[in-house]
Image (cartoon, rainbow, N blue to C red; front, top):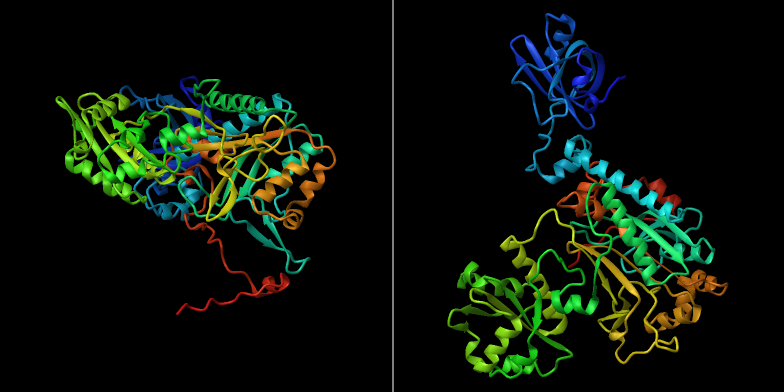
Length: 589
């Protein structure tokens, strides 16, 4: 229906008759002459409807309103002197319309396109209209380019794209499964995959050597800005590899994606151990675009006259006392603000927050009276304090202190506005613990199929189970976990041992993972891999505020699709076929 897209039209087409098609972004009647800005997928062109040139086209143009769908044919000419629009690729030309067709009319819009103040639920209800904006189109154009770059890179590296099942067996992988009832097998259920983890390992047993998939995954979990119940990941697995091989592939993949999308990033990324990330930044996904590094001062506080601090400092394995220096913080924050910061950390379980101010005549603050001059000097030296700086202290149980001080670090960076934009800081976080213990239960930090660190005899050795490390790695971008992976367990006896440490009996292991354990009996190769969250990647590349902006038809934070009204009730007959019945919940008394 068209001869040209709008973006293709320029001064070289002056004098030519062409046809364009799209939506009306604006219409202006200048007392005889009617100007229409017509937009297609990625550009706007100005149409001029002049009754002197074509009465019929001008008459139709009088009826045109915003968002009408038009097809227009006409001769291109240069815009008048001083009337050019440098913001448009087509800004030096315009079309004198000979023929105009209204392909479809539009009701008045429920909201103004490109208005950032519109309620998000309204935008999601009319998501197809939000997608009509140039901003949305550019996001999905970049997403397409990134996905194609990923496929091409992995193809060049001899990876084979393989699709794994979408309805499969329910297995415990951390989050809740979405369950799908079976009509044929009454009372039994499939699950939507949280990841293709077990199937890609089986592909390695099958000898596929190098696999990838742009995989849809599903998790029934509470949502945040960077989470959705269904999401897409670039999933990769390879055989006969070690950790360095896998990281090399991941870095090449990420570098090529960014390069193809016109971003400049390094070919190799910084690395940090999990222990250092937690101790220095209070997070396993630290944002490295700014400093604000925490310093351990528990040995200095052990000598102070304050019993609260000195008692905490007696157990350096269980407890922490961390200092967080803020350069020029004494000049930036008032005393009231510094005292108010205590209320912020209390929200995350802190019992308090101490602070010092570095003045011309030395370190001052409510805590100063509890320290000797030598220990005050030690704090100044340890924290590298200069005049005008402020330093904050958190004390208590290790996990609690690292958590709230890590959150406080981010909070300070945000209110101080020191986080640079348009900067990509990648970081590998390495050597994750194999397990974490919560409420007396031992859980895998990544997943149960991760290779633990083994001793020289190839055995698991540890004093405290939480100190056992794994061969696992996460890739972090600007404080967001972009993805991660591990070297996998490929031997049945070792996998069973890990299940035992997690409190999974042989019977339960066989029931839930028997197909994997059985596969290991037939010569499973050493293998490992990783997965990158495609949605999160695009969110960061486009500087979007939410993952919902980079998914064509996203769910709300309540896991609802306002556009289609999903989830929704189904007919009783459908439930009957599935041997299901809805029971009304009895109000609690």
